Image 1 (cartoon, rainbow, N blue to C red):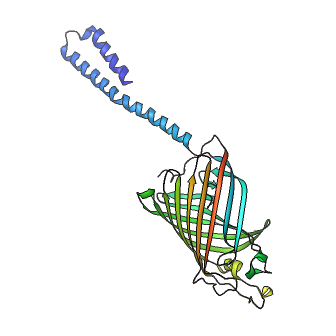
Image 2: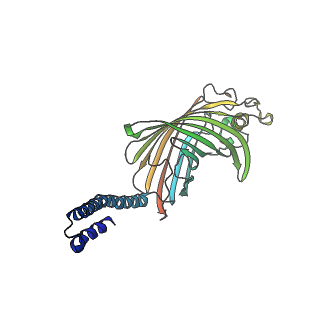
Image 3: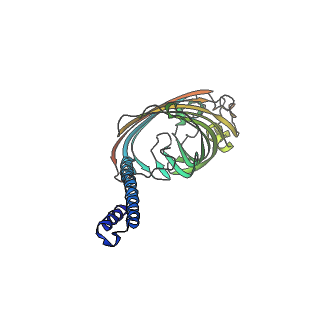
Length: 323
């Protein structure tokens, strides 16, 4: 240690009698000791800073979110039975959900995007694996689809390339542009059926209003393949009626969603989300389908979540977190 060396040098000056009567050598030895002692004094605050930094890092790790959580959640929605439908339906789902915050996979951390997988991250560009769910609908409850097959639970999964292109000091606002492609599969019980692919370009704005409040705005025009459009707008000949002509759906523009939502964390364990979505379908490719019954639709939704258990092991932050 530098301090030990300086003390040793000073002791040598006082005990080594070989230097007596040699002022030049004594002076040189004193200079070396003073320099060494000065270096030790300069390094000691740095060592203290390192200790403080390590302590703060430990605190940051302990304050990180848990790797696993168990929550009781309730989700409610009131809106169109399917895109461009004039018939509305209510959905309410109470259930316990596991939350997982892996470095590359996140489960049920975000009520709007319940399953997300990180594939690539570099600066302000990231590639995720994105999932979406659409509630099933009973066709007998929809006048335009009476007598037709039900619309089953629809699961969509695919890549999302996201670019953060602007930041604002006001409310720590961030602007994103996301390109999405999702493969859709419907499930009748456990029986899956491929339903085509949808493509979206999403403009996204996220603002941190307070330490507990976050707001989001999303504008999402969507296009889809013919098979995807068939699921909503095709009328097979066997289901044609005098008031519902047979129709073959075409690929192209599906519509645009404008979504706003607000998230509030009341405490470490309790949080809520409320939101609204406006669906704009004017000019859609299949607006002449007998199942296309409304140009503008609206949806309201909300969720409440309570955390009752978390793991002691903490999640490892993703590269983009804390920027």
